[in-house]
Length: 472
Image 1 (cartoon, rainbow, N blue to C red):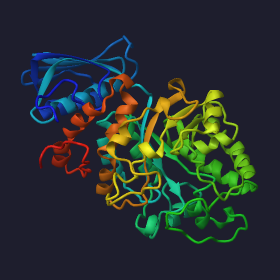
Image 2 (image 1 turned 30 degrees about the horizontal axis):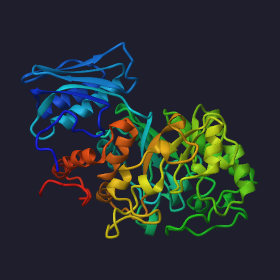
Image 3 (image 1 turned 120 degrees about the vertical axis):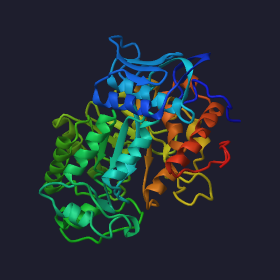
Image 4 (image 1 turned 180 degrees about the vertical axis):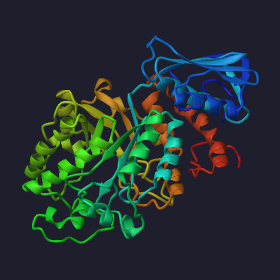
């Protein structure tokens, strides 16, 4: 059952250490919380007055809690958030916002908190259905409540190309034009100015944008726009179905690498974050020899422009440059290539489809989503551990976890929210909270508290039967 009395630990993700002081509370207004958040974003770090005291935001020289950790103390006369870096202050304020929801009464005590993993990600697929700058920002605002710090944007696929590339105008004229997206229902694209706007908005909120240009497969939109990239130079038909594995860049053509380098340099120049995602998945029409030859030419390019390459785990079939990150997405619990990559010192992001794919149906009756990796109810998204998921992948080799949302069945922001919540908070807690601090029964009580908040904010969510939601 849901707790009837607000407790200091009633937040998501669960903090690393909670020391409650049950006799103490502090009242706070939404306006004071908003001013505290604005102070962190501005870097001013001024004390914020509240009716009954102050919210103090303090930088500390001590870095015992790391770059994203914070110490939160709530007394009868005020609140202090202390952190070594502004990111830690920001996450501390997010905790305050959750604690202050509803009646504005903060339970007293101390929280000391820091993330388990450096990379806590969510992916949004813009290729199969496009979402505007404002829609992406609004989605990000919901993600940061749960301390997600990487936004992976899947920008290209067979059904659409969603980022302007100077010198290659037909990529977006055709690949982002009318009739693109699954079933032709998702046209649109980001100009470089749009992309810069999203990147800056995310960075202000301590979120790193990870752009993905999927290759050598999932490229039909590019081949439609520029037939000279095909094997025979002949036009190919656009596709708006959800099939995979039929398209490929040509490993043996120099035109391929001139195109790829232009795209990746454009992306590197526009992306202040350290990562470029190169895809590399489901290249079923690319021979194994051509796949390795392509990756041998392309995987070093992010490093040439000061970035680290990320790829879906199929890239582990190639020799991976130092710093390359492998993102595991399959449901299987063994993969020799990923194990070999870890043994060679490469890092892994864990995104198993049967646990983290937000586009899987919750149950057989879910009105949206797919089920090729099985059904993913909320408990299944929560009850697993990334350090025990894949043979050879240990805690030390994990960069983090991420929850992809593919958009084959999405047609609106409400659809995005419906498949994201309440499963995204489950994955967020896996990424932040120490394993010993995670507990399903506690989580289901805490996530139930968000039902009224989402409803008040007009956020669509799935009322999972596993959760004891408050009555409507």
